[in-house]
Image 1: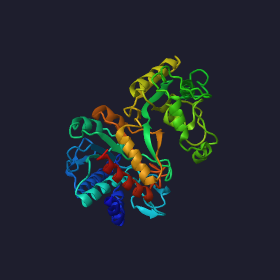
Image 2: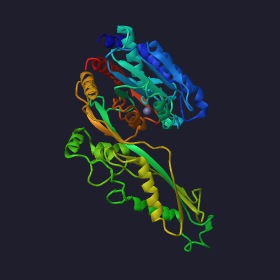
Image 3: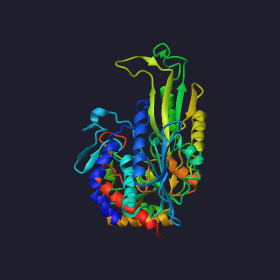
Image 4: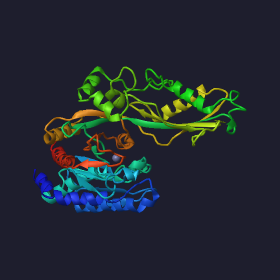
Length: 456
Ligand SMILES: [Zn+2]
């Protein structure tokens, strides 16, 4: 494929362009960066136009813009929708970065910058492969539509309404997303599952105000103690089983064959443990680490607060205690129902000497498992094998990309999660990087994939 030569001979220029993209601090959660988010959208627009796409448009939304466009129509060829995001997480804490987060630094074949892997570097793969097809053969062999948003890191609040409103324009045969990682440079993988997410915040209220622990201690319940007891009632400390009634009712069971396949992927518990720094691993009894992360739901307290937390001693009997709880979900759990069941259970077990309020958070998403054998997926698996020299493992990821479930719901299409990150890319953390060998292999894989889909 001549496109591969084109990518190789233009590599230096491409890396300079990627540096320019990464230099834009498009932090979607900070209003002071709104102009930068716009600038990143403009960068994508200009790149897509240079790659020969038509009808390239920056759509304004109540939040940050969505960029769309499509390649020159090819009659009879399949249509691929490419989704990605140009916004990034905040870079703080800045003092932990070896080089400034928005001054991309090339060290040891890796480009260090916020957004390098998540997701600008991966979006860039598509920009350049489309450019290569445009330059070499005057257009892409399949119909490509792109949908690049600027609000992924804040939960894509405007994307589902956008999808629904542009359902016709975005109609496709398959969706392609590169916003995940492979198991390793020499152990390629394709993600075939993502967990869903739901969350609640709970407040336990005792007395109407903080009390003197001498005058009142022993006569009025302590909300922090009560909250802890309630949390223990939600999850068995020995088996790790979640005790909220109905919690597991809709959990899809792994077949013996599924479990065998998951066990095939290279995984070392001790290496995994040592990377976490925890003295031992802990999780639901009866499941392997890979199963616990990919195929089982969780109940995690993300934060807990109340009482006096300043310096020294303060003998107070606090009036309130709070906890933030999130639950990673698996097919076919419904985020709304799980949040409701959690709320109901917390209220039910609340003792009469406190008042408990539960708020369900807006940030929710369905879990999804993708069929590993549908035709376009087979082409993708083959493209990975051609470039990496070995067939990809199929993995279930513990994280969530809620929009993927919406592609299925709104567009009725499956998504191929073909990520080119690596597990140590430090997404959302200081010193995020993208390995340029993965950039090269990513471009080659996508070029093969788009080329082969035309004849599949
Ligand atoms: Zn991302």
